[in-house]
Image 1: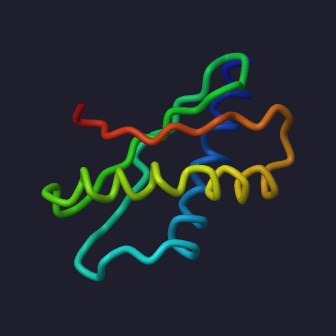
Image 2: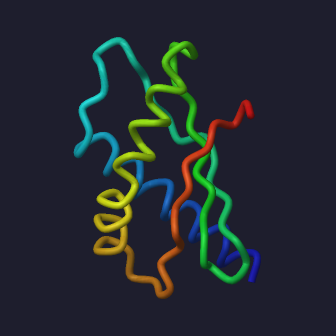
Length: 95
């Protein structure tokens, strides 16, 4: 089962990276990276840890992602072929 969770984590990380890169326009001098994904064993939720450079804009970017979480979740649901699709939660790894 642990291998399956690792595979799902990698799949979510890859797909969310593409969604964030293509669907959302962040400021030019800002780099947003998905650092880690942790999915619960029952696949109901995934914590998405993001890193932002410069760090001074981390709260702003995290707030923006959380405001758009519904549309991000919808896009992710269409792309993933797993059921249930985990509910995503964006977090700052420094907290």
